[in-house]
Amino acid sequence: PPPVVAPPVPEERPGILQRIRDRLSGGNDLSGVNDNVPPPAAPPAPVVPPPVPPVFPGQ
Figure 1 (cartoon, helix red, strand yellow):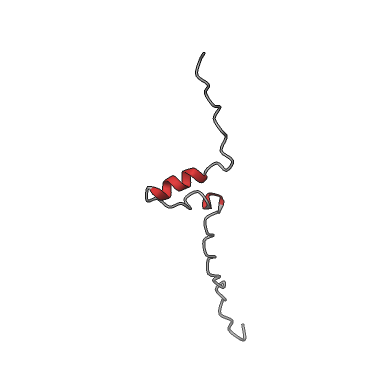
Figure 2: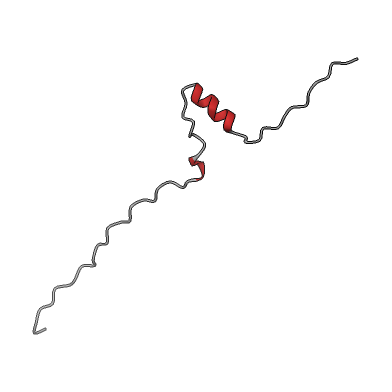
């Protein structure tokens, strides 16, 4: 009879083993955590007041 091959067991939490392997290989185990975090927004440009024309009395 052919040998009985057990079906592959689906991983309950995909990515956990990959992060463990990354950590064991010296990588950062948090490499995939912040993928969905947008980059920090650029600081707002300083508000420059419009130049005020000089006012001469008597004109």
